Length: 247
Ligand SMILES: [Zn+2]
Image 1 (tube, rainbow, N blue to C red):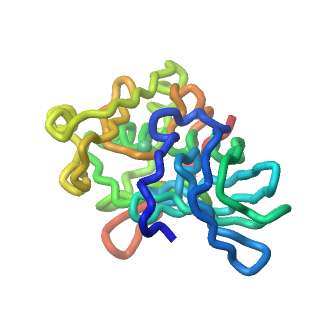
Image 2: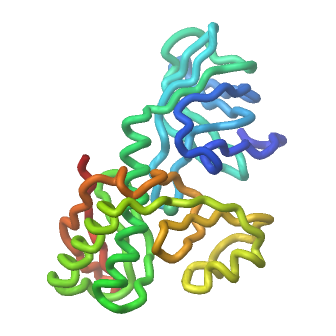
């Protein structure tokens, strides 16, 4: 599917608020008559990865329309899979549109997850180490160790509420690995990053910078109300903090 194709330009890395864009279809692989896989030269669709569920939306031209149900990242290429709504998908120029309500919810949850890391560390006066996260349903962040006491969780929730009210900006930068190492001295997962020419660093004002390829809101105010729903102990000495965001 992705063989011989150049890496897809990932438009969401530099502009996370792009809900629509023009692109070119480079390859089409039909699946039966009802579905198809499409590769574009550039994409606003964030594929499933890094705890973030795949974007959904629509790719269309005067000749066809595809309801995008899933975007998959494979060897630098984003593969869009979905249902053919009308016509027959073909190569050439297309319009792309995200299901923005869903994407924006994921952006709010993603930013909330970073804020949660910061506030849990503050509330427990320890360094927290994340293991994984999932931002669809269920919505949680996983950490090493045992769940904090309920007072600490309540304190973390209050700290998050204060930061959201104060309205910190979320900054995105692209730095060289050398610059990143200096900036990321507190980021425990730096060594796990693949070797890249430039690393995308996300910083919520007042919090430690983090290397992250996901989509975030540009100000934590957009998160709305962050509620910690429960902490769940898992058998492998890790725990999950389940949370929700509401407007
Ligand atoms: Zn992130």
